[in-house]
Image 1 (cartoon, rainbow, N blue to C red):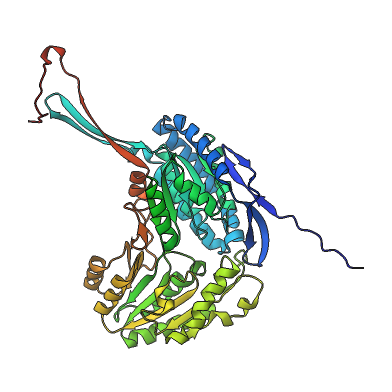
Image 2 (image 1 turned 120 degrees about the vertical axis):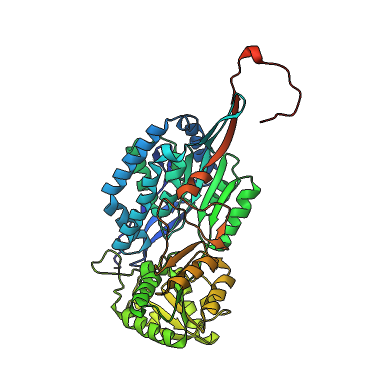
Length: 506
């Protein structure tokens, strides 16, 4: 007689609305995989239009009192939340690793960079100070204040399930808005834990809400008349859709898209330093970073040969495995489908005329049940090849050979993406010229991943950003508020008279 396998009950990931967990009622859900094992570990509820509307209604009601909350109290809550995130770094990181697959060390780094944005938001009393001009005209003062928008929303990607939400909601909430977060359905659990920590910090119920879901939830967020602004990070095609749909419905939108970040290596660069940087920036987090270096532009064949040899020498030392295992430096990709798509770029590269120097598909771990792919290196890439043109979003590094600095610059400036870039050189003049001429939003000089610190702002150019304002930092505060200019006069009644002329300031 056959023995029945025991049925495994998967964890259920639900919504967070009005300060509590709310199970979905749409009847639709998705699978949350464990990328290291290839097995399902949870189901996540997908919100209906009505469930999104319910979350917005709660947030709208909470806004009435939250926007009146004194700045000092908002700062106090942010300080407490900051301390709670700090105390729970490892727990948040473990949730990230279990669902995303990145190593624990990488996940801890993600939490740390998110925490910087919370720390920035604790300074909200200073950040919201306006300007004041006394005696702009006789007895007239003019001043500007910044006020919150109302209910705002964030739609965040799978690759940073804790950091990117903190990029958005920390400033948004501190500015006096209420927030709807629609996290990636691939790794939704960190968002719920952050919601719990915000509640513990004293944030009133309804100010921060999490709606799990897919395109149904996204489209309702973009169409809902009570949502005043939407922040998004993801691929360029979706970013364009978010921007066009959201603005069509009268919303303020910042939509950060894809990237193809180039790292120029000049002949005078320290080859060992450049190789270390290229390996770190290309293969960290299995290449699932919008700021990953995916193209090395080597100026001169001698530079290219030396650099490829140095990179190839370092690649076998990268320990690939489950993110929670001690000593592992690179984990799996997020899903089997994504792993297979990334692998297809390696397969097609020789057909397009490139050379595969290291094939990650041949790594023994790529044959395991998890969604693994070893680090890969492609030489002789060039524009027109998919491995060069597309955002691969995986552990594949391509090398383009050029003869001159001008060719390298032209290559970057003609690419449709303009997120980040870097140059490795000992020549200060060349570095200064590069930062002046290159068309990208973030530039590293001997720094491979130039993600700005929290008191600057993050964002690219060209097809890497749709909207006028970058993410977090000063531009984040500007995005989540609107300016109001007040002109006031408190005249002596005895001097008042009728004046039908055009208002004068002199």
